[in-house]
Length: 580
Image (tube, rainbow, N blue to C red; front, side, top):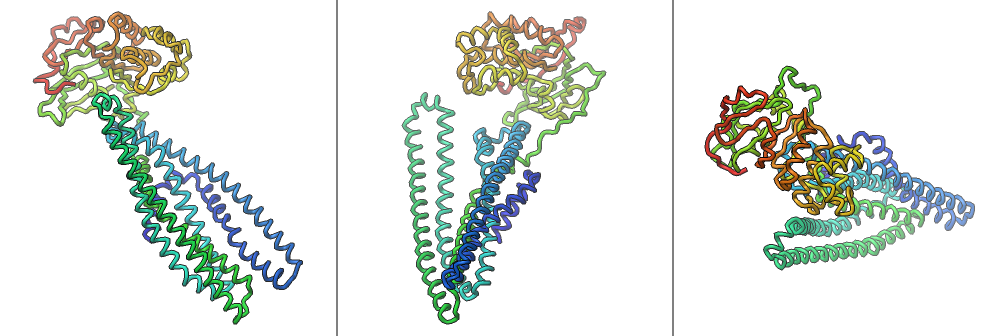
């Protein structure tokens, strides 16, 4: 009963995500149960053959028996084909839907939540754990119900044929169940150990793959090899023990059921045939139903045992699927009379592990279309300020007003619809340059992509590789130099216009000869857009009309309002306590 309650609770958690396929569920369940029909009718047909054809020597029944077998075979074949088609279609739809749900949550999960998961863990949930949900539905729901039906119907038919034999069968059955349960516990214990060891093997492979440079640099190859070998040997030993236990279980059950049970059933059937004139066909039919009950009982015990190792995977899928998505409010509108994109009003910010606050009493405004440079000494809080403007960090005091509303009211999804950020740590997937650029503009043509690559002086490098747009970037840009990666990120930026562009050291690895030309192209391309830039290069600095220097009391210079040059704004106070 405990397992039934657990199974029902898990199914209730899964059901909201698969409820739209209710009709398919009912149809598949009927087909699954219908597939037990041949197993249930064969003993009756065999009984008919023995009683009326062999015992009574009535040949006319022979055609009826043959017709029944052929009809049964035809029905069985049709049910199997329909079951296979609907099963594949339904569970492909279910796993596809679950993967889409999880992927949507990965994309729109709040950043602070996303940082609590490892990438490999999220990938495992998307692949292995979703498959476990499928196996739960197949085994714990459909197979479980069909075997229960098999046991109940076989019991009813055996009782209706000969209740004495049914009583003897149920006296013999507990020993089979006890033997099976005894070995199932051992197999489950070993399976749990296997799962832990497989996880350890995967973790070691992933770490070696991710940190192979560190392994080489620190000459840790021998240590890693020994560590991996130890875990692998433990896993192989556990697998051998599991195989041995499975063999012993099968042997014990086969001996008990094939020899002991059959001898007892046939002996009892022979005695009943002698004294109560029971037909031999009835005895054979009862033995067939007894096998059905034993098979159903064994399968249910295996299904029950497998529930324990499915539960962690299912809970991991449900955990992600139940996470709230960031709210996206299409009705939110900026203040039409306010030209300020940002109003930073007396904000303070400090990291938890540091006593002093980095940003102290910071206030300024950035209007629509302004080109703003944030400069300051290394560690003065420039990148922290950029993160406060993008909503990645929230001030401990004060407000950041974005388009007339408190920035905290916007989800990151809403903010990134307006903001495009390029920093020196852009992550690159192992895809082609073409695929990378199309992430910004799906309908971009080859000529358009070539033009943006020419604009950032990247096209010659791609041509030199003889593949042009088909050049593979490599994992995290391993096939490109740091300067080429930054140029590629800027090329993608040019393909799509956002209202606000943020450049955080986006030119740091680009040759000095290219910087001026690229920044001029960007400023010309985004003439109406707001650009906020962090840079140290003088060629870049002199191209911005407004400068906010972080780290001391400074002047905010604005070419459009020269009379305000002497207006002093306190941007940051106090010592810098952390290098950003």
